[in-house]
Structures are given as structure tokens and as C-alpha cells.
Amino acid sequence: MKMPVLATLTLLGALALSGCATGPSTATSGTATPGTAATAAATESASPEACSGVRVVVDFGTLAAPKITDCVATATTIAASAVMKTAAIATEGTVQYGDQVVCRVNGRPAADETVTVTGQASFVESCQSMAPAYAYWALWIQTAPGAAWEYAQEGLGSLQVTPGQSLGLVFTTGAETPTPGS
Image (tube, rainbow, N blue to C red; front, side, top):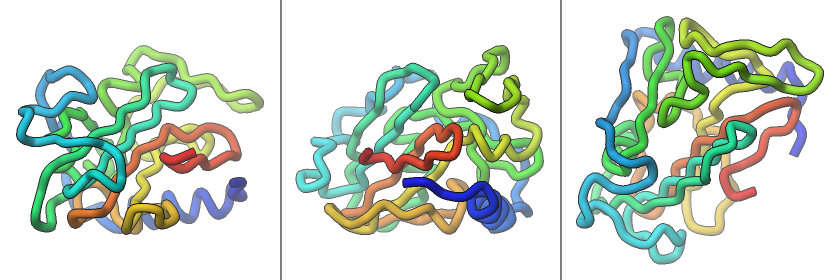
């Protein structure tokens, strides 16, 4: 699916402004192995149909790290940031927008990692403000198994998810906006 740059910038701006009153964020989980749950009781099968809690999908795209798929057991509404923490997925927000804008997932892109996108200026992510519109972490939600993935209308810091929903983070580069399921 292609999305014009202006539409992408509009979506990023709306996402950032939805929670710009929050303060700076640090990692939301400890040093657990990426993609493994904090405890065995916290996760179950990551298949959308078998997950009775909230399914998590993290796609690192061009950052060349293995895709993470997990299921966080919950019977009630839960904060998206708590889902990530329970799944042992460390997220870092920006100085300007806190955890409303995801800057790093499990340390990627690293503070010393040059991000290169064909046809664009290479950069090192500082996590000060918004990432360039051609290389950023996109937050997605799927409201039910089999439903279409949609851009989240809130940031990780304020988004609430319910059992049966899926939460996705995709490192998006260029003009393409892949969904967590693609």
C-alpha cells in the first residue's frame, strides 16, 4: 500500500499531537530477551485466532532484526505500553513527545546506527523529536482477528487495547507503509 508523503506527515502529526503533553519517556521494559514474555503466564500462542489476550507484532523492516509475534494474556482493557512491557519489548519515546511517538524498539535504530533509505538523506536517530517521514516506527491496531490493520489514532502512551485486538509496530521506510501482517 502506498501513502503520499503529505498524508504520512499528517498522520504522524496527529499521532504526536494526541499526547504531546506527556513528558519524556525511557524504555518501558527491562532487559529481557526481545520477543519473550516476562513470565510464561503472561503469554500464549501468538496466532490471532488462538490469542485470547492482545496479540503483539513487531516488524523491524530494514533494521534487519527478527520479527516478533507474541500474545499477552489479559481479560480486561490494558494500556498499549503495558502490553509491550509484558511482552518484554522495550520501547523508547522522544524527548519532545514522550512515549506518544516511538523512537526505538529493543534499542533499534541504535543511537549510533545510521539509517539509510534509498533516495533520502541518511541519519542517526537522536530521539529528540519526530523521525523523518521516510523512516519511522508506525503504530498499528487490528480491532479483531482478520480485520484490516489501521494506523493507531493515539500514541503508545495513551492507547488502550482490549482482548482480541492486535497491536503492531513496523519500522516504515520510504513511501511504502507496510502493515504488521504484510
